[in-house]
Image (cartoon, rainbow, N blue to C red):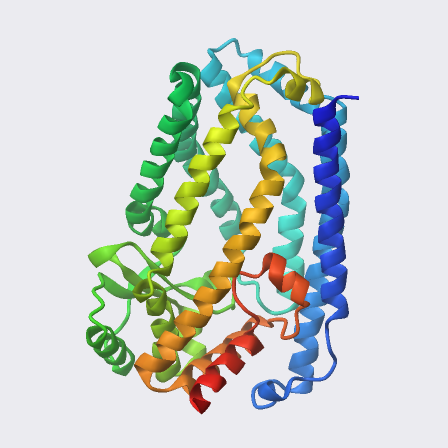
Length: 413
């Protein structure tokens, strides 16, 4: 049997097994006793609801995994990629256009396969637990907008990558790296202005005590920003969130309207201080730098597997091509990607602790952030007792109880 095929099937099955084991361990870690820290914000019914939400979403993820993994394996074994390749080649276009058609068909079929799961997750599970505010119209419009953006933005980038790998020689990987890097940086400025408003409405925060408190805090921290906005997150969900977008003086502070409704002004400032801590501690720069380096390494390794006959034989392909090489390489790279993701999560969790500490120190009141974290957990039905291995592999943020304990330790010192 083809060695690459054995390796790819092993990667898929090991990944599947790990996800199943971690999910089951996470379910077993649920505890019926409410942690004392949350006794002031959770009642028994709400806590039971949060645990039921974790069980439901975890089991649904397992079901999806049990369905999609065999489909993927069968698609490989029965030459599904070759069938799509022949379909793309039937348009009798050049290699770049054929590559775009091939990739487009793969995305289309993958989207169709995943669509029932998305619909059930949003309109059944999220609806059952009181989160969903997405209408059928909004759901359909989101899909249409995403497809259009994928064609208008993703299409040209993929075309450039294919062109460079076909004409760039031994340095093609380096040129592709620069192209994607430049695109990523440009999007940091364009996304808040051109793309995000296509999906949500951004409104300048109205005048009042909250805006005064935010401006005063930002001024004290010498933090320049373009503006403070609320986003109609309630258009799709009742969950709470806040984030920054942009760089330099183009930075924007964005609060979900749901967060402003649930948190007090002091708690909102504490959440803002946490996000500001990421900037002040250069976490975003560090993570972006690591991502850029990782991207360069990925493109270089990819260049070593272009038009690999053994790899194409594993997928039962009749023709070699640059565009299919990109897809097939993704299967081989997934273990490396997973390991890098684990390392990234380790640093990300450390950064969260540092941002929490920054917020507590600069606001001179860690209790406001603790209260905000509690309310976020209650409103989002967060799992308060995730399994440590699940946290290690998948969490970019520490569990909320660990964050609160760290903040309380600061108060004692």
